[in-house]
Amino acid sequence: MSSSYAPNDSVTESWSTIVAAGAEAESFLQGQLSQDIANLATATRWSLVLAPDSSVLSSVVVARDDEQFVLTMPSLLVDPVLARLRRFLLRTACTLDAGGEVAGPFASLEDRLAARWPGYGELARQLSPHCYGQSFVDQTISFTKGCFTGQELVGRLDARGASVPWRVVTFEGPSVDEVDACLRSMGPAGPQGVTSVAAGPTGVRGFGVAHRTLLTNGDLGPVIVEALP
Image 1 (cartoon, rainbow, N blue to C red):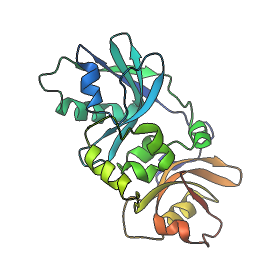
Image 2: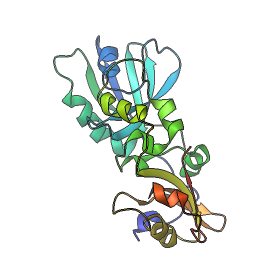
Image 3: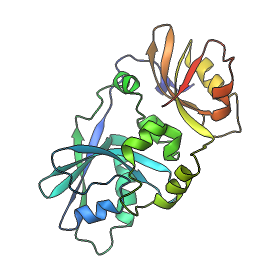
């Protein structure tokens, strides 16, 4: 097991920004982000940057700062998100620049676990939005604002009841190895396994990915697994 999965109560979360500025920044982002950002004033909104196949590249917190927009996301996802957005930045009065590290919505992995919100480890699996739970979808996607990149496929999945094979889960268990083996024990080979881990009261706790059939198996031994709501 990779040493990056060593449990640590104070695993910090690193956040950075992308700044979108220019006369057409709002219209450009409306076509690229999953959330409706029209009339965004002092509030912030969670949104998603999706690949054309509707898989999630990153969740982002969107804020307006005068005539520009600031997108806050896990630091390790800034480069791929910039590359993805710039693919569609053609003849548009909008600039996109990395804005540096900032304080984000969660200071630590423990904060994210309490909020049951996926972070870099989970987002790096590039799953479809519904794999992260209905609450995640409800907070990050507008199905009424019109077209955005990835909208057709994610909208079709939502209309069909969002039955997805992979689910992001929280877990508690004796050790990383035992939890990882449990998460990989059902379903075909795929993205399942431990994605983020911290010390727990009797071992380890964190996030992972499991096949949906694992969630209907009543005997997981000492491992407790719950899908994100």
